[in-house]
Structures are given as C-alpha cells and as structure tokens.
Amino acid sequence: MNAKQETLEQGCMESGRDFWAGAMNSGPILLGVIPFGITCGVMGLTAGLTSLETIMMSIFVFAGASQFVAITMFGAGITGFGLIVFTTLLVNLRHMLMGASLAKYLVKQSLFRQVLLSFLLTDEAYAVTISRIHQGGYSSAYQFGVSISLYITWALSTIAGVLVGSYIPNPLAWGLDFAMPATFLVLLFPRLTDRCSIVVCVVAGLISIAGVLYLPGKWYMIVACIGAVLVGGLMEGEKASEK
Image 1: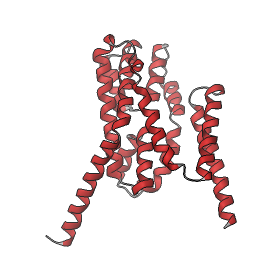
Image 2 (image 1 turned 135 degrees about the vertical axis):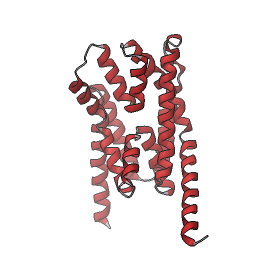
Image 3 (image 1 turned 120 degrees about the horizontal axis):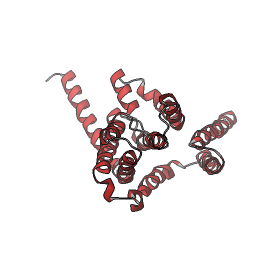
Image 4 (image 1 turned 45 degrees about the vertical axis):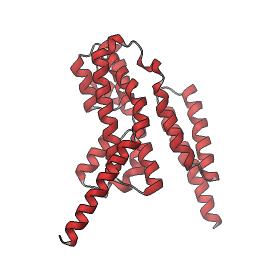
C-alpha cells in the first residue's frame, strides 16, 4: 500500500468518525424535532393538503418555519404561488446570515457538497456545526452527519403525523419542543468567554424580545442578528485599535 492510498484511507476513516459524531451530537435536538414534525403532518391534512403533498413538502422543502407558514396560508385559502414563495423567503432570510458565516468553509468543498449542505442547512444543524468549529475545526462530514439526522427525523415525523395525527390532537403538548432551545443554550453558554461575547449575546436577546413584541412574523431574528453583528463589530474594532 503506497502513501497515497494510506492517506486516502485515513481520510475516509476520519470522515466516518466525524459523520457519526455529528449524528450522535444531534441527538438531544432530535427530541424537539419530532413533535414539530408530527404537528406539520397534522396541519397539512387539516389545511386540505393530501398525505402525499404534506410528506413531499417535508422531503423537498425541509424548512419547518416556512412549511408552517405555507400550510397556514393554504388553510386560509391563499394559493398564489408567488405570494407563498415571497412570504416563506422572508421567513428564511436568516439562512443568508448562517450561510455567510459558513461560506469560508463551504467554498473549499465540491459543488455537490456545497449544494447538499446548503439544502440541509437549518438553525439546529448550524448551531451544532458552529459549536464543533469552535472546539475542533470544521468538518463537512460532521455537518452532514448532523444535517442528515435532522432531515430523516423531520421526514419520518411528518409521515407519523400524517398516519396517526388524528389520534394526537396536540403533539407539542408533550413538552419535548423545549429540547431545542435547551440544547441551543447549552451550545451558547460555553462561547460566552469574554466581555464582547456577553454584550453581543445580551444585545441580541433584548432586540429579539422587543422584536417579538413589536415586529410582525420572524423579522425579529433578522433585526437581532444585524444588531448583534454591528455591536460585535464595533467592539472588536475598538479592541483592535487599542492594541
């Protein structure tokens, strides 16, 4: 076996370990995904979509918030393709910010991997992947392991909602949805290691709360992100000028 083959095999082994590590680390979040997926299946049928349409939406769209918005619009009798696409685009504008922060890693990947990981990008996958980057660097296999676990769980949960939704009037009443914000907090707190990160976190939190109260839809996410970035940039600039 030559050196090239050994290097290739070692790379494959490392990718495999990273993949399964990502899949395992997504476990706590999956508990929160399940009730939302079931609810999506129930809501789809309630809004007048067929079982196949509801399931295909989860498979080909894979965007929880956008799916809920679209299903609600269908249920209200709004069927204009352009209006639904525009509304769901606004809901998911935050993906531009997440994608921008991962761009320097993704541009080094093949086009196929870029497209695949971009399609599978969600809030939950982003949070777990960013945590891994801070701890041990970026790995596309790790991100894929996290993302595909969430994707499969979301699809299966939607199917479960379609099949048994009539027997479960309110899946979110289980309280499992708290697993997602709890996991996000666990990922966030270790990153708050200096004055800048703490201030940015507080600013983002305050803007988010104000946005939920006074802004329509999901705009509070975008505004909070922009506000936090501006504050963080200013503080980092001041720190750099003092050195």
